[in-house]
Image (cartoon, rainbow, N blue to C red):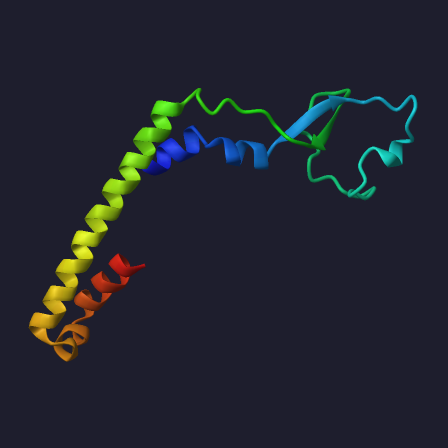
Length: 120
């Protein structure tokens, strides 16, 4: 659920970072090569994003941080719950490792796999 919320309702920092604006082509007073300073003539990475007559530009996008505020609070709550569950599993695995002794614990493949998954 947490990943779904992050992909469907991205935070404003992500929207502003990845913004590509489509602006009208105005070449009446500026040479065509001066419009995009960092691109080359063979740079077609943003081709097909904008409609005909508009030029893609890297700029600062606008975002209303309060539009999906409740969704972001829910996502943060799910993140906290995930961390709590993983912490409980981590404590349980460490107690099991102490009870079995580390030599025995790490010789069992599934204990080792579980420890690596929960730790990472």
